[in-house]
Length: 473
Image (cartoon, rainbow, N blue to C red; front, side, top):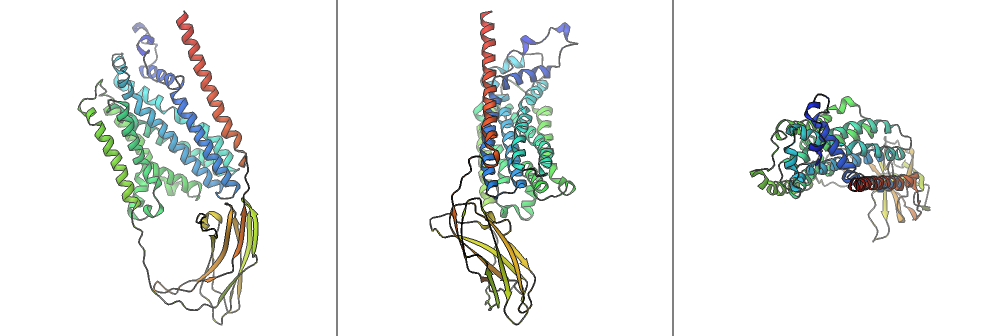
């Protein structure tokens, strides 16, 4: 890393025309990262991961399981998180790796200030982000299916990634400066990354309340993904969500400030006493991640139980379908009729769709995955009045299922309950049906990694050829 910096620097009498010192460090680091293959290797792995996830999402799109907006959001979220992780890994190796390879001493002896050295390495370590972002865009475009949310995803994804990736890279370099070995640096860096990532993986029950809302605003990655989700999926405006950009923005500014303003200036060959504490920092950061995860994931959901006597309800619900056999991916549409057969006006009504797997060894069905609208609401019905409701189910998994509807009268008050009324069932047989190229994504899944691997092979061949020519000369 940066081994030839002294030899390649112009003579002192050309100081007025030579490039800045940080630029020399940057270009050398960039060459080592990309021509040397480490950054390219990580980007190829990132591309393979992105291709696999895109294939799965495209398959779900064929099954009408995930709307295009949500697919764009999910893929953008994964792209930003993975690209940030690449930057953190490279940053965590930037200084401690030089110490471990015994090349840091030669760097510190060059006529380059500590700050310029850190700036050059930092800029090179951030370079995988724009490359990863450019690679991600074709996948986003393919899965968007022409949805206008793609334009928003590109704009906000570029902004949020350009805050998170440099912030995580700077965090990795801060750890690297204070660590004497790659093992310690990577261990601590991974622990801190998990600490940033954990809030994005918490269940919905842990994200409610005052603490949950505060966590959404102060955690840089969670705030970024919350902003992205609400703008892309829920059509919220920038003015409503601008506050969620503060956390990733401050994260990038604070890490850069600490890196260039304090720790970078004190860069030394040996880390001193702090290096012996590196392992303890690693253990403490990992324990902190576990403690936060366990504490938040086990927050008990408050549940209240009331006892009441259900009264008979003069309501009836019927379905126009009894049994169907379909393939996976086929939509199923049907209608229900809810009627008030009594002599008094009914309360307001809630009609819910439910699906049961008839195979006791099969997976439990989540109706929200099968239907874009599993609940509908209706006003009160006069005596003898009825209402027609249309429904759609997306057959996403093969198996033997029973679909039934439930109409629930709205209770009179918080201390009251009501008697649900169930319909007859629709016996639904779903047969397997597989598409080998869902959404036309397969050429991207295979083609882009192959192109990158060929490019990497060409770079390796060219580098080896230059070494051989230099040796023979």
